[in-house]
Image 1 (tube, chains in turn purple, yellow, green):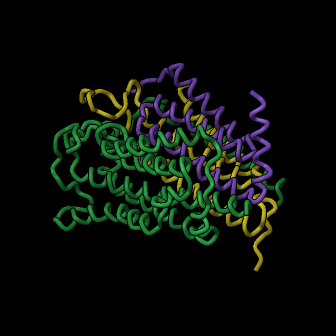
Image 2 (tube, each protein chain N blue to C red):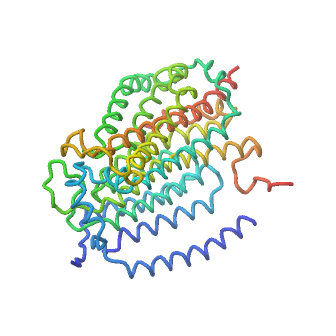
Image 3 (cartoon, each protein chain N blue to C red):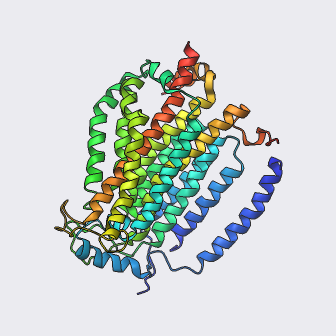
Length: 100
Length: 114
Length: 247
């Protein structure tokens, strides 16, 4: 049974978003911002896996990309910044609290 | 158009590798590696997709309805959880390098001596 | 090798790789045209034979159980590597003395409310892993993540029972070893390694699948303990420099 697939618009949208998301994660150079973008990319991947009829894989990606990845990466970032964390962290908080 | 998911998987793989090669920060490098890994999940699931198929779960669903391939899903889901520990290992190596060399820039880490 | 050399070499090699992969796309079946026999066979035989409605769960723990045993040991070895690398840098006693609270009130309230729910949902995912979507891997990560929220709700000291190496190491080893023990039990009783031991049970309930249930819980236990070890090591890496920089 050889069927030529007609890609449903939903699938095409999701695949396009995945391609954009991957480029966004790679192009974000600062690790602190990159982990946030990576969390969003993980959620896009969850939507992709659901569209591809794989609920187990979607559950796996969900629990991993929302908690496990950010926790280890943020701890590593904080450790790499080391003693400078006292000076650096208050400033981004102030400027992000002022912007919205 | 019917090769779209495979083309997207190839694109993500190359973009991730590009990020690894041009990275200036070892943590950024580790996250680009996870992007490359995600291309394999997409590829596997796209290979296993059956037209008009539902999820391979038959609770409340009549036996015999078309379902997608469960083998590739089994491979992907164990892989995703194992990749967390591999990322943790890479980050632990990064922290070790930071203790030794004082920097996480791959270009500035002095080569091994002796 | 300088950075510029590296990028030039990668550009050439990457273009070549991209061309090869693009050429290979021309020869594979279209998206959705699934040809391989195993998907159709498994969807047809797993439910009548093993009585588990989650075919993916049965594939992970029974049909391809040997593969999962290998993946489990990858996890085990990687966590062992992380423990060896991070052991000397932040002693646990220093982490336990750090008594600061996480700064944001909203985070503390949400974390307090979510800890119980996350752990319960994780346990449900593990328990019903072979009936509805879920399984040992997903549920194990969810339980560990729920327990890690204790650090954000309170201080490092309240996370300490889950970070205790004396407790987590035996649990992780039990989870990893139980898989092998179930397989060996099948060998001892005269069948091949990892043969499904008990009767299949009733379709769609918890009592189905035979030894899939045991192996599912073993994997859930191992993944949860491994991830809690990882979380405790990394949180210690976060807390100790903060405490040192404040003194």
